[in-house]
Length: 106
Image (tube, rainbow, N blue to C red):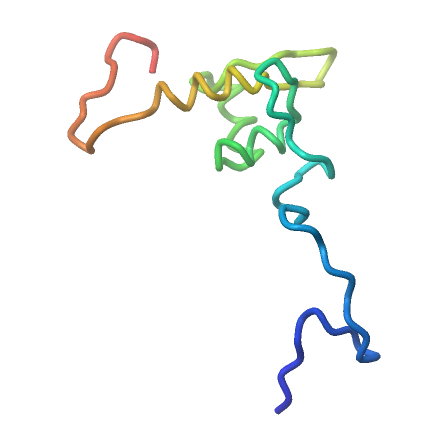
């Protein structure tokens, strides 16, 4: 059994190489995720940064307890990167026995 290099096409030619960080998982909307704290991010970008699924973020929007979001119009929703950072930092603990921040809405 011959192992083929994944960068080699069927005709033996090499596939074009991608620059570092150019994989689809790194760029969920086909563009680099903006570093600006005020940037409005799509749900897929927010999901990537929080390591949650889009479905989980959608559920948290319905039930509450998720990061703050901006409703632009109708069903169009975006997340400010700064709000994602705040939300994730609120869930930072030093150990599994850390009681958290009771009464702070966390």
